[in-house]
Amino acid sequence: MSNKDIILVGQFGSPVGLKGEIKVNMMTTSFEVFKNLKNYYNFDGKVAWNFKKILFKNNKCVVQLEDYFSKEDVIELKGKKIFSDKKFLPKTKDNEFYINDLIECHIFLKDKSSIGKVSSVQNFGAGDLLEVNYNNKFILIPFDKKNILSVNINEKEIIAEPLSGIID
Image (cartoon, rainbow, N blue to C red; front, side):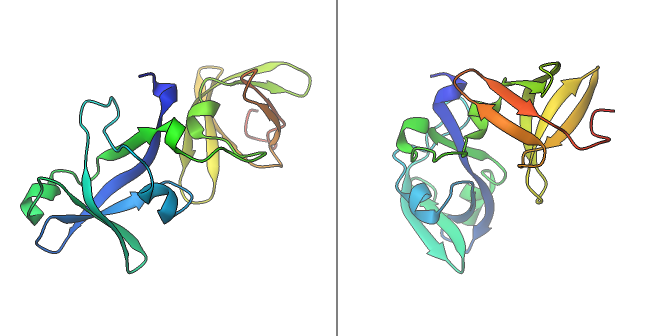
């Protein structure tokens, strides 16, 4: 299985109660999308998690895993990322992209000069930022209509017009 075939769908949070339930910070578009996935596992697929229950309690996703029966059992999961197969996720709409599809895209300015490749996508709460190694330093380009003019996933190309100060 390649990294392009798996998508980050959540991250385990804090235990809930004493019976082995744990919060999940979902990274899907909705609870229904998360709940209807077929597989849940760690980043390399070597550890699979089977959920007995997936609930939406107090505006939070809470799961109970098979073979986890107490708070002590699930505490080790806190912070671990949850992945699933891309094929089980909904198709993207126009101008929607999975983060994995943006990684390794070449970023060019309007004049076709290269800025570099997307090494990761960060989000600190105010929107997605494309992380790029430019002139031996990492820069963050906001992934919005002001800074990104076009994205061609098939060609792995992004045309950008970063705001003044981002690259100079």
